[in-house]
Every structure is written in structure tokens, then in C-alpha cells.
Image (cartoon, rainbow, N blue to C red; front, side, top):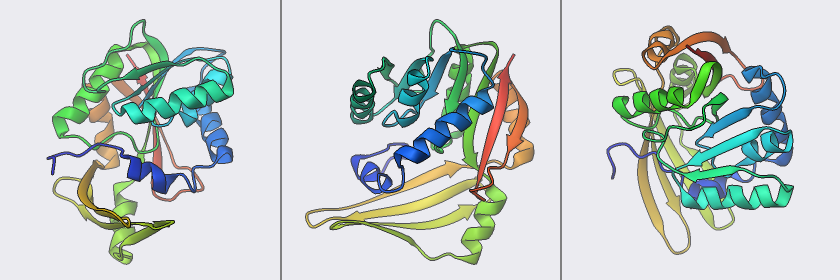
Length: 241
């Protein structure tokens, strides 16, 4: 088992497909643009783009989108999505702890709880390298979770989360570690032919820590948004300085 497992596997993609609908992607893309506050078509970094569901929608609205993911299979899915929509994406298989986008962009997003699965040093490098690829005054949107709500909800209902997709079953046993400020998920996936086990650790600092975390990477925290339809989630809006 890797010390910090940040991979999004084909198995993970299988269990996400059921609720990541086209309608949801449309709504989330509109939300992203509202949080970025961009005036007209702009260059945007979709960091940890996954299958490109947000990136292709931003591109279809006239934006120049750099879509980055470490998983070549996800980038291949994003390429298919772009082809289906008839749009162009700057697709990159790259490590967010090392990639710096040039020329710099006017906005960036870390969406769908992409940020926080690495070591403290790795997480810091992701933010630093994103800052290196942004113009001064550019907005960064981070979609993450509220640790207070997460800890409370898991404490109230500690039962494993079980998802079924045909003959495949995914089970997540969750706990919140207040010392490391991490949501720890022990995930097992069973299929007729295989069984896998891995551990994911998502860093969820307390809200009052975010200004200093972002400051260290060259950002100022502007706003914390609580989406009305998801009690666990918070959206952080920061400005590159």
C-alpha cells in the first residue's frame, strides 16, 4: 500500500458513473464559472480533471481549458468527451506536484474533492505549482469537505458505505483522524474475479487554517461557500497575488 494513495482507478470510475449525470455536470460547470468570476472566455486550468466532464463544458462555452490528470485512462476519457462535444482541450497527463502551466491562466479549479490526498508536502506543492501557472489576481476554486461536519456525521453514522454496480461491490469504512486532520477511508472492491483493498487519506484542515495554507502558496482566501445541496461540502475561493 502506498503511503499516500491519490489514484483514481477504473474501479472508482465504475462506481461514480451512476450519479455523475450530464445534468449534474452542467450545473457544476455553471457553478465553477460563477465562483471563478471570469468576464468572458478565459484560459482555465482544470487540475485533476478526471474524465473531463467539467473541462469539456467550459470549453464548449468558449474557454481555453488546460485539463490535467495523472491517470492516462482518465485523460483518454476526457479526450473522448471533448471529441463527442466537438471541442478542443489542452490535455496533459501530469503530476500536479510538478506541473506548472504556461502561459499562465486566468483561473483554476480543484473540483470533486481532488485536493488533499497527498502528504502535507505534496499538497503544498500542488497549490504552489498551481499558483505558478496563474496570472496575478486569478481565482482558484477548491471543492473540499468541512471537517467538522464530516467528523460529526461519521460519528453519528459509522456504518460502512456500500455501492453496487452489477456484480461489483465497493465498501468504504470511514473514520476521521483529528490528529492528522484526515478522513481515512478503507476501501474494498469485490468483483466475480477480483478483490482489492486500499486506504485513502483526505486532508481536511479546519476552516480557520485555510487562510494560512493558501497564503503559503501565494493566495489570499476570498470566500468560503457552503452549497445548499451538500452539507459536507465547502467551496474555497482564493485569489493569486
